[in-house]
Length: 623
Image (cartoon, rainbow, N blue to C red):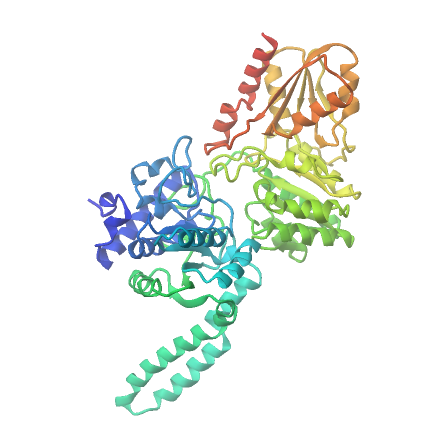
């Protein structure tokens, strides 16, 4: 019987020996590798925090003490020792446990998150609430150094230093956020371990002490070692953290359980805010993940013996987009590619490899990515700002205040548009059509398939009157025939996929592809329009068909929230022209957060796949 089988809460690890904790760490790694190889998930980040998680729960008393995980994509070890071991096999499955921390799931998850750089603000809020309510508990925030590239983290640090609340911050330094960390903050942390002062002191003093008499040398070397560590800890970090009022400790080996427990136990008694810097290895304990932590950050099912993902029949939309963009960029020297810490996820790793001088990874800083892209566009370059739909939400102010207001021709490639699947409500890209279409000067498109995607990339490239966005889904392309030469789509012009009468179906994005399949199986002559543009919408085409008097019903279909989305745009057209003699049904994402499950499962539940659309049409038309 293993140790993990007897761990039902953090209390069960507090009396374990260091040797038993090490065995427990190995068991945790084995079960994480096994489950993620079947279900997919965030493997490398979780393997890197096993000892850190055990040390935190050993020293602190959750759930009374609050442990807040930044991004929370590294909570698998935490879940395994907080009562979710027996359901861990359901990780990220429909009806199973989430891949992130969620308040609804456990009292050990005091704060939910799926995006980076939120933990410090949340932790300070918990600490202030604790003190105002006269309660006594510790507040711990675990933040990766990659998350320090996000603006909210620095806003929080400034406030934490000012308020001086008791707060325990763990800086998990693994040189990665999702992919290899970039930027000044990452380099700064690296300097702590490689500063000239550190190595100069080490070499010169070490050599000097080596010349002392034999009976003094070992004692002197021990003193020198302690002094060396003191100089390391009092040099560079002091400037950054202690000058704003946060005590700094470390760096410590994040895989040394004895050292972590001893230091956490000592430092948690310190009054005021503290930062404890730990060094961990992303992917620790699984060689494929250690060698390639970027790929294993978030991965689908794979062969755990070899570490190789199971082959897919067709490439992903992300890869298709990136390869198409590279082709254009080789011909047009003004094209630049921008990503916010997602070179692998967005497919732009190919752009980085082939055209590195025009590739920019700005870190986990989506608002900066938009502002940076805006300035590039204003200076005559052609930036393709490539960000997941759910992450672009974080740059909403910049989209309005900077890009659109100044009519900067930034090309927004919005990955993971629509239902995403396994990552759940924090990652579903179901709001972009709504929040983009309300912005003046913005053009918003969505392709029905990969052939139309390449046309939209071409259209965006040629459009220079202001910002233009195109969103495409997560998952594999459909395998349709792709033209050798992409074509520019006239702005705001829809496409008739099927002529008909009685029912007018207006679909946007890949929902037009599914609707076409549905009508083929129904074998009914209903009108199907592939809208292509959410803004500007093709009013002229819609009105031309309505004027015929052949249509009494309209069905709009979108994989976006119904609130303010494509269907709302159609209703606005009808209201504008006083058309009230048609019955309208809006099919899309209901006004609630969509939980995790596979993309296919969720589309089926929401009736947004081929079969679901058939069912809705039959019911609406009373077939």
